Image (cartoon, rainbow, N blue to C red; front, side):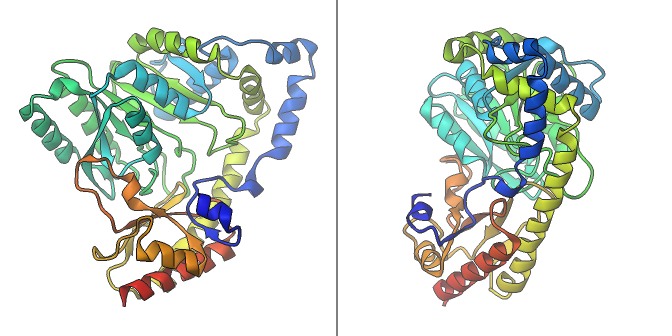
Length: 399
């Protein structure tokens, strides 16, 4: 990121930011006016809120989840907790569940910011083999067996998933795999409950195909799966509103920790988001967002077909949503900071995220020949230009 700031002329295909041109300025203005049309509602929005969050927004979130996942009122309002973005929920749940040295099983590759969070609390991320449908259930069982043989099964406290268009690989888990992972968590919960943390930040960013129910729908008792959601990708990151759906036994400890941390997440933006839904502004915005991002995704995939396909050993996954394209280079070409390719790409004028950052330090081997490309920020023209620059850099290094 510092390299991008040093050279504003670089085409950054690195940062997973949302497109500034699609931010909902008019919708926010309309919702803001609705908040203050009644002095009582305006005063309530400007006052302190509760630790779990604004009850109207929580009701909306619960009702939408019940409808989307056909849960038949299986989620109580008390299980919905609003946070300052989904990362706060991930942090609160991880702090609640984990002690130093505990283990979280993650797909290999996975969201590198969450691995940083685990490192900060001295927990261990252990990688599980994945493919174009995400974490492989058989590989998950194999990893459990290895951990059990090492006498550390009791240290496994969670399985972390990004089941929709994951960061970095853009893959989506099938419903069958979601069910298999939840069942594995329950089956291996021999010493303590192993939770499944479902990070659903990209769920709304689907451009093709039908929605798939959350892993929470695979948890009949509601005691295993934690859902973390956010409006950062689907509406506005600056509003900083996320939420979690918690098993009942985690509600009190998470809220106790949360109350000590923030005394309630920003109340004003929760009232604002509630008005966004009440004014029927959210779903039309998501529809426009999907159309814009779908065009950008196709621009990147078409550019890959044109410029990357002729290069030997270069492959990529074609996602149906999200913000990322995951690129595999020949094993001999390393992509990390300081590598010949990274420096060559900078000279060409394009920036990417080295894929090695996305692999847990334990478990599956780290791959040094992967690249994460993001199409969220750039125009279709800049995306094509950036991919062409990257192709020239790869060709130069590969010679």
